[in-house]
Length: 382
Image (cartoon, rainbow, N blue to C red):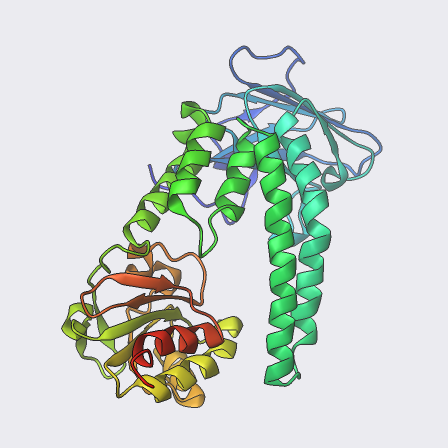
């Protein structure tokens, strides 16, 4: 079933059914959502939307005497939203809409507010309570990261690198907070979502992740779309761990030629995933250039795989940063086929491959790349 996207909501005709206010009787084996608007601006229509597999489910209910309700059944828990229409139409800009976001599952839930739906309180949704609790812990750390990025604009490269280190401290703190939440909420769909978001960073151990995934979440959760996505990421990561053969690939270079990774067999090769729009990647490039200049004549090559969507921006970044190695891309942004093949979910990321085509190191950042290459090429020097 294809995903349906509705840009304009023109009354009840858009939906399968428009419902009058229903009774507060709970629905067996499904959800019942009752909304109560006390002293809120007049509202005429409530819209409920949520995802199920690859489809967006949309339902509507007429607001009568400050009340509305929805009934139904979900196969999987899902992030959902209730959107109120005040008057005859919705605002043209979605972010100006009166919307409440929550988690929906097969329970009886009561949504109430004294002003607007976005300031509602929700009773009967344990998943939403869990989501609010973890968000309250993580949001202050996220705000600090945003503030640090904003202050970086006119700073020198050394200062930017120091700032990136500080940002990484906050990122690690977020991951630690999320990990504590996940292990203390086994069997929770919110914990499953957080597992996907936080437990699989660039250097994650797929064997450890696989063990935790199967121990913390039952088969029903593992079979949800989120669970299947986690299993897919873990499976891909197992194919690109240190000691495994680097997966071969073919992509197009900046000058339009086809390049195949296996054509460099017999050399040490750094497969470097990056993008022109990625600030940490651009900050990392001077270290990569330094390593390349030192070892390019010692059986060492770099293949930059760009996650750009614009060839012009990709080319300008290569020229501006002075990156004189092989560059390839299919210009599919995060859907770059090589990135998906290697399970790349953040950049910069890299893999060091030996002459036999075996991955011997991953995500060598800063001076770590030069140091690792020194261990390889300088070990026989006096």
